[in-house]
Length: 92
Image 1: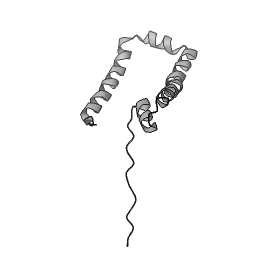
Image 2: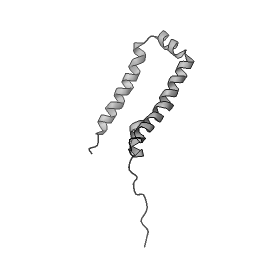
Image 3: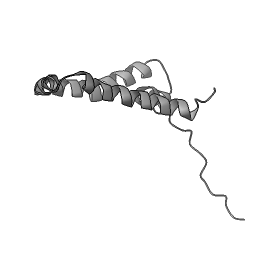
Image 4: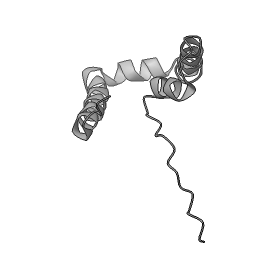
């Protein structure tokens, strides 16, 4: 399998960051404060995004008999590297 060039990863992170910064520029200060004022709603949204969605993703991918390191990569978006042999040779 061919590796993705590093510049593609950097550009994708840049796109996400710029898009996330553009959202507040399109909304008024009043709309943002009004939305943040609903503490019950914000708590449920944070719980869903940081707890429920990852659990559902792990359950869905684990039911497909995918290796766990691949499940972690799909859920978190980070690749796990293969363990390298770090054992030192024994002196004779």
